[in-house]
Length: 277
Length: 258
Image (tube, chains in turn yellow, red):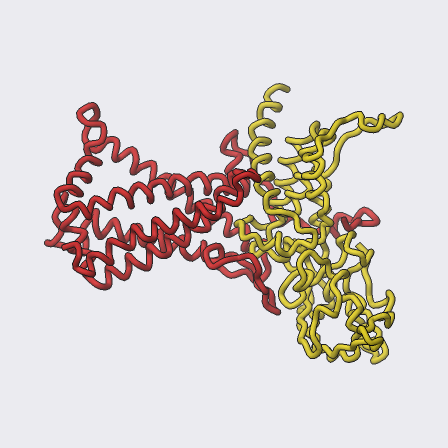
């Protein structure tokens, strides 16, 4: 996870309307400021004028930060990395929704033209007890790494490269696994969940590995370990469905049903396996 | 997925909110986990829903007249005929219901506590987190948001309902043991009592609307071929229970059952 305090490319000025004029927005921002994990936080009101409509949300924050630096105010800390919607590093609550109002869009892929001139935008960090705020808009999501560590891997023989297509994978299984593998681990599901549950994240990781032939050797151990690690950090799912709506990759709620099924099977099967040793 | 560049120092790690307790023997250890508790909640919920449906259908005997519903109540006490002692089977079912209620409430309470401790600034009853800047919900509905409110309402209502028509605390001299028709009409003709029944049964239907759909999801009943039917089924069943159960206080108040 890379910390970003400003830097990056400031609005590049490519945003032009049909007649060649750049559309500029004036926004009223309410941005969460918090000096550290245990410091009290609060909203900072920023009048952001002259924001190009074609810049992304993160570029808008870059522009705001450059101005803050000019005014000798500490820039706003926010996490970002690839800025093309695939790394899962960025992510803030924008007007009460993770990654903002657009469906299937990460914060970095959200463009300012989706807002109107004069809009008030409230920006605050993702919240959950296991996502402590590092600073301002940046949260520590290493609890996700703990879930991955506990079972998000497969065992593969090393040595000579296996023949291509040696392991047949049916097309629909590959598609199902790919839908789950689209998860970028941004934490929007936890942020959106009123229970702060990480079911959708864990279900995506399990759904990805548990259906593929390569994932079978650890399947039941994985289901048990990842779910129980998840439970030690996050809340309990009540099937609101808010996570799927917030997910920039539109991971389906159906994966949670698969998680539940695999977990119970694992609890039965692992007992049998344990009794054999 | 975001990568951590260097292995973090142990002290820098985000500590788990809860540690695993000592494992109980199988299958009790399943109930020690949140997903296991969800299974128990779903299974007991389906059981209780079965009771609610049968109870509602059985009560429709009210419309056939006093002798029919009293005969039906007598038949419940006499289940099993002369093969088993009178009311034995009824008591077995009652104990099963009490056990299901207990487990349903205990699992709901523990899961609410897990969510509350996992959420900053959580609401004490709902266990749901609050954003200082407000949260804009997209998918939640009234039913799913109020599960932890409708639940206690139903619990209190069940106690009221038992005290009202099984123990006859309020009707006093007007309560005639075994004369179901008389007791129901006597009780529901009071306006405050009718209002309690109406409010509680609306809460019950709202609870069932989310609970039944949620049970499919929790039990892992998921098949692309019939997933789209799950919401519809929950709506139809919750609606049928709402109409059936509300008809009793309304018909009595309207003077159509007297």
